[in-house]
Length: 392
Image (cartoon, rainbow, N blue to C red; front, side):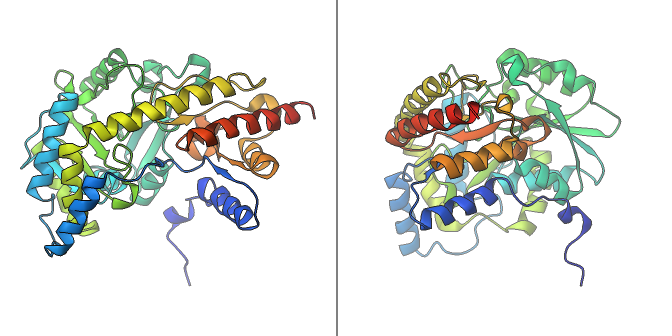
């Protein structure tokens, strides 16, 4: 019996989930493990959101909702986007609420790209991008961004990869896994290319609140870009609601209409009672976000300070998100071998950089979404492990 189609066979097993499984097995055996492989905040979800969910359940909000989300949630999202980032969208026609950002991205590719068409994507990138492309039959073309250039995008790397089959461009800022933030000047250069070549931009802004050096800027706010940009966000990071599966897409009404045609056949709607909880988060969660981001900056500053003292690691201080993505090639091992070594030697779990695209190879991702005490302990253990490795 045929096990899967040819596209699915190309999706590699391993990476994050393989090392996560190994870490859990060692933890069950009694080994002390510091989990820095999972990209999720360690904060509880906002209390007011949880109370709203309980109330929604008591009020029997357990059935299908409007495909594009309940009106109070759409309005709450639109109000927050305007209040926080200056984005202006119509709550009736220019937003759809999805079952997380991953569903949003998949729905976009299915709605707007034919098999074999090309999606340009800055690399390193969130590992699911390549798998979504494979599932949908889209060709993902990687645009390199290098640590040797301080994670600054060379716009010519985009230009030289555009072909007659290029249809969309996917950017992610603040970036997972590197932590870089695209400046307004860089975004304007990307916008110019998109307009010149009639490309649609998918802007993954799931880490919009985690910007430690300045204000978050969405490419959709630049001149003539709103009509060709699809902004993807979620509650997962900003409100530590990863398990709630509430994401959304902002874009022009003629594009949202077709995304909804896919969305209704993937999930019908986001979970009803979770949507009611999310309303409270968007309406009353600004202080919650502020407190969490302040703590993450404290953790990131300390973790960067510790890692920057380790000889052989090449590292750039992240401007956003909550990851360190040091280059480890000087130690003479692959990123997979380094990740396994750190797990077995000192119980610190990171993700091999090759999980994040061709240009993530030779790096390791370490999420500092752990307690401050864990961050300090991890820094000490990593120094010990890398010093030992360097002396081999």
